[in-house]
Image 1 (cartoon, rainbow, N blue to C red):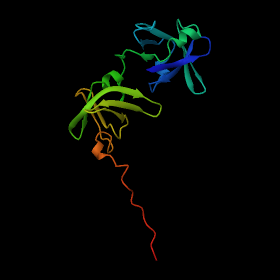
Image 2: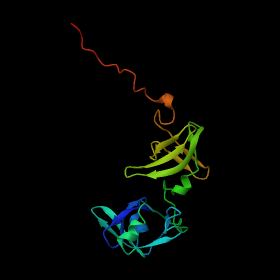
Image 3: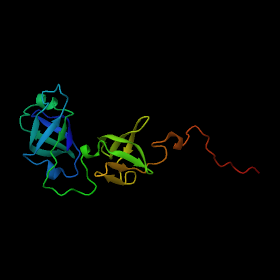
Amino acid sequence: MGRLTKAHGLKGALKLELFTDDPERRFVPGATFSLQVPATSPWHGQSLTLTELRWYNGQPVGFFENVADRSAAESLAKAILWIEQPTDEEPEDDAWYDFQLVGLRVIRDGAEVGEVVRVDHFPAQDLLVVRSAERDVLVPFVSAIVPTVDIAAGTVTVTPPAGLFDDEDAIDASAPVDSPTPDAE
């Protein structure tokens, strides 16, 4: 649902990076989140319960049970918040959880070109990290480039621009560019 980015103030508040399109529904008092933190963290295996969500200068800031001061908040910086997939909700069109996308085969022009290994969330858009034969490829997760996600078939269909997967499709930046020459008179 989001990531705790850094402590805010002295009373245990944390700035949030939201991964949900519906924070008003997901971040309500009493909402409980599982934590993804390193195994060495004192928060490993624990969950957090939201007590309040406020907005400061357009930035969401959360207050959580048992996070009473800045030191506790700083120990949670960079933690990722997860929820269990609600069983009583209708699924949204074109909305997936990261765990549903990771492991899907990536298909381009009918051929498999790789596998989704993770989803990176950025303010402008999400990126699918696709492990291809030679390297990881960052694929913008937008409908123009990823027109079809088929969870049941275990596939993601991509229509990437030239050069995204194949180096030979890339435009050669070292090649001279033809420019019009002035007419000699």
